Image 1 (cartoon, rainbow, N blue to C red):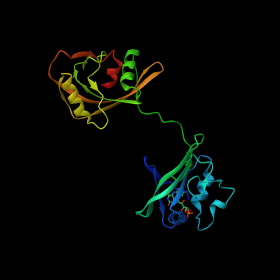
Image 2: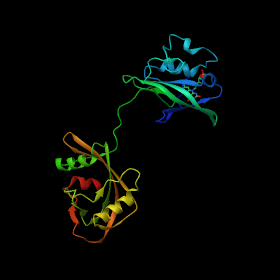
Image 3: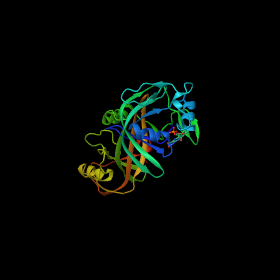
Image 4: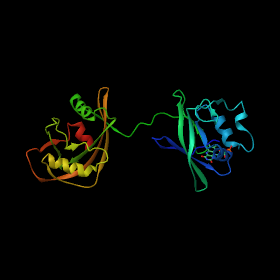
Length: 267
Ligand SMILES: Cc1cc2nc3c(=O)[nH]c(=O)nc-3n(C[C@H](O)[C@H](O)[C@H](O)COP(=O)(O)O)c2cc1C
């Protein structure tokens, strides 16, 4: 059958869930054989998708239609697989459960192959589509000098997106910056929380450690940036909280927003 309700639900073991209706021949086949194949249709396979979805195996043996389906031999199961797809995953049934008016069948992938040269067929609002152009993420591009970019790339250490949490303290047209031991750049106070750690609590601890006595608001602001210098880039997410000075220390410096692209992009 053609099935749109197909989703991977675990990496290790690799499990895929499918949701299929009671009256289908596919459900009966899977109940009998305890296995199934998932063949992710490629853009060239609209006929295969229409026929597999438009006729039931009760009506006609679809796989015998040689002008529609090209069959390939499976590696680890007995169910025939379909040629020309982007993915062929051979699955053994591990769970069956009635959910709403469909059955959820979970299969453990016992063999999988992927054809990089093919693009998947997209089904949306009852029509077939090919993959469109890449959607550019909503990040603000910020041109920075080489020193700034290198600083962020170094702390990103190969990460696609560097996640930071920082505090914005404003006084007239100036923003509080620090040029702490590690950070010779004088940027707003910021740090990189490990994953799973509450960002605001991490920031408060960090500020204490840096001897910055600030009061931190509890409403986060998200700034998604691409720092750029020539062809070199680093994606950086800043979660920012507004702050107020409780006690002034000599770590504190002030910087005008104008003249600093990075700080301008954060405020
Ligand atoms: C694009 C498309 C997506 C479909 N997705 C599902 C699905 O996720 N679950 C389902 O039960 N039927 C789905 N169907 C309907 C079945 O493919 C259809 O009922 C088919 O005839 C069943 O074949 P069978 O009786 O040989 O199993 C879909 C049909 C199309 C055209």
